Length: 69
Image 1: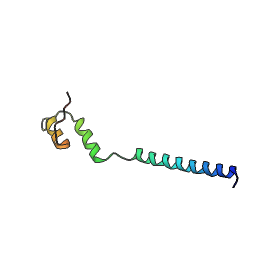
Image 2: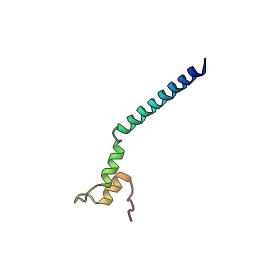
Image 3: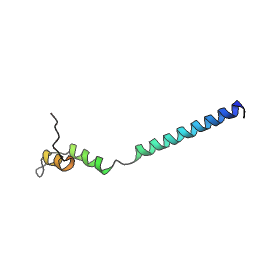
Image 4: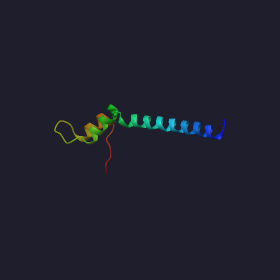
């Protein structure tokens, strides 16, 4: 095996690895967030309603009242 063949094999392996990592990261970035994540963000962005207070929503979703100040 000469050096040109070794270099081309190493370049092909590097290209294959980088292509695989790119596809894996793209797949993770494009999937929907988990329901747990969505519920927490809905609770944090919850508008004031008459039926529940902000503390009630935090207790239901997070299990404790969050401190903002």
